[in-house]
Image (cartoon, rainbow, N blue to C red):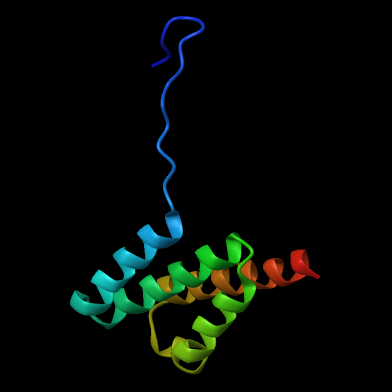
Length: 95
């Protein structure tokens, strides 16, 4: 809800990279295999969307998800395809 005209709302800046890393670390410690893969895909997707291509690429290569993605259900495969598209667009944007 907006305040009276001329009033200002204080907005706290959030470092989404650090927040996402903390959430992913929690999942990596406590989640099952599917949850861990989804967390990794979301983390790579996030880096790609914020033009951190090398970080995203390195996470993907270290995870070796491209070798095992066909063993997961279709929902995870769709997330993998979205992440791959985001990574490709990131590379394109950065030249």
